[in-house]
Structures are given as structure tokens and as C-alpha cells.
Figure 1 (cartoon, rainbow, N blue to C red):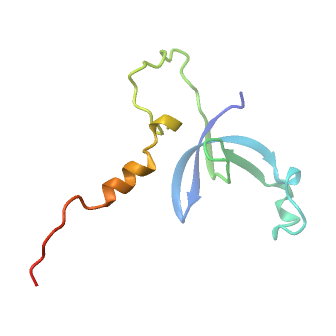
Figure 2: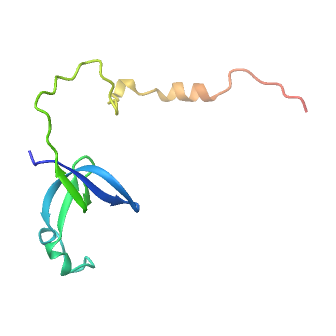
Figure 3: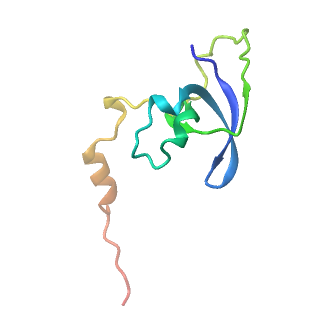
Length: 108
């Protein structure tokens, strides 16, 4: 596993903390038409593993993960609950919910 770092970098003009991985210097991925060529050759780039974004931190510190993390209990809430085919609402139920069930008489 690639070592993780706690980093500080700039996002939308504000300092932001994130978890990142070192990925190398720009010479491995840069092209002459990037707009920064050739000064970018020595620039180190990082990647945010949770989203795949490239970032350029101004501060970093190795992240030491604890070794005694317990097993995850079954009752834990999930941020993004997987939705199976059977869990999705049926189109007929959605249409029935949109159609009024009784006529509403309005005064004019």
C-alpha cells in the first residue's frame, strides 16, 4: 500500500486538509502543451485516493494509521448504501403517487 499523508492544499482559494498519496514528479505525466512546460518538470504531484484528483500540497505529514482497528460491526451505517435492482421503486408506484386520488373541487 502506498503511504498516506495528511496534507494542506488550496481548494477554491481556501486552505483545505486532505489525505493524499505521493505520485511522482511532473516529468512522468506532463506534456509540452500543459502551459507550465518546462518549469513543471521538477514539480512533485500528489493524488487524492478517494476521488482521484491531483493536488499540490504546501504542507504534508506522514499519516500513521493505528494497527489495532477493530472489525466493523454489521449494524454500522453506510454513507452510500448500495441499491439493488429489487430495492428500487417500481415505475407504476411512482406514477400512482403522482396522480391525485380524488378530485378536489375548487371555488372560483
